[in-house]
Image (cartoon, rainbow over all chains, first blue to last red; front, side, top):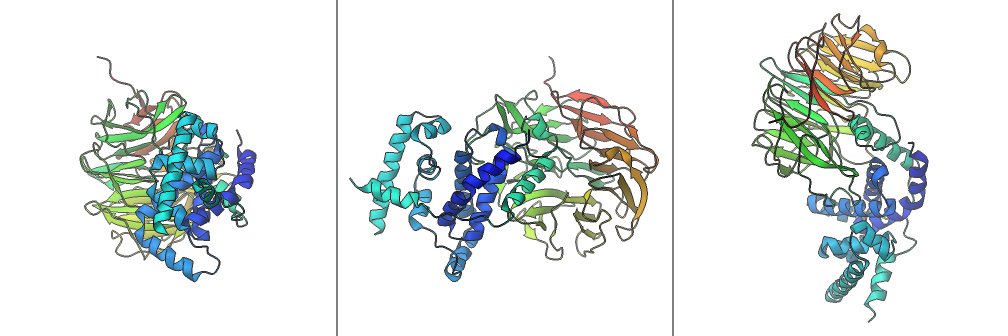
Length: 154
Length: 402
């Protein structure tokens, strides 16, 4: 099966929003492109088994961002410096980073799939293999936790 | 309660798109094809359809005369069933020989070796199978690896081994416990020699060049080898023999014959095309170069890559670069992208198809006449020959009958 046409269509549809979201998370255009591109490479590698490419892309990107932060403290510092020096680079959104770093994986995954990948509640539930009610409860918990964190940080 | 409004404004952020640079899709598709190529027939076995047809991995045989090792370059087995990224939890599967889809093999002697690969599960595969033999492949036993190695395995001896690919792991107890190590990127190929680890690393997704890193088995943190400039990411491979190390890919070739103390940059005889290298002695090399169209060529160097001679055509591997292994200048073994192995006992001048049941995903010498390999298809098996590929034994991966 030649997946190139379908893969390219998915790329045209989802790459720019995904890379934009990655930029908000990492604050660097090049890194954002790297992460988005890697997510697409992995998607192509598992094309026949992925049921929802959009969900796969965002979850993979989220994992890559997490790994990047966790594993490379030195690079993180350097990126911050680069971000302030580069006129074109956007600063990482601290709230978003807080979201990823402080929320439990289960909650942040639900948030990413629902808000960033734009999946409806039912689709998120299907992806994660849980009931829609569980997704709703997790979203509520995530909102409450983030709200609390935001208030504390102000 | 207005927290939801703030939250959604924060999260949704419409219009913050990042336009892909020109050529991004082409680069992504090419990268996916390369990974597919490195996986060889594994993806076909697992039922994963990708953009391009399967192409073989690069294989290198190396080792000292008293401790020959086979190391097969293969990309790590990936989960085909996971839909939530690499770090998402995968189903817990009890490893068994029947479920194992062998993807890489590593021998530390003529009798002791390991194979690893994904495990079949309903609807796809999961990473995590490791099997060991102590009788030259006559029988295999599943290792209760914890956690299972995620990538291609390389063992340096009976106890010390590494797994590489997206993850970099080490074992010091023969494969039972694996410890995660920091990695500078995606490890494309890795070999060990005389206690030293050599690794070719892709540091970023869009990188067109690979960098050489090194470490020691006792201190496995990879450090960049500054003397070796980045090499092209086309059929990259590390080929070792005694104190010689050859790093090849695309147009590039780097060579050392003193364990990496001094490096040279000889010409790559394949000139950027599809390629495979093998070393039958420290300074004796063979290179199989396969152009996109036409007949492949076999080159030979007797002086560690300084000079090359085109010694024969390789008509059987037309447009399907394969793996190359050599026991001597005369005894050569090639596997092709279609799974057909060919042997030559005449310096590459005459070739004959090896009679092996099933498509051979790779095969290589581990001593002067001893070849080991793996077959794919519905019933993967370990195959071996003790007479330079003239006759073969075929051992399916299944638990022994009691």
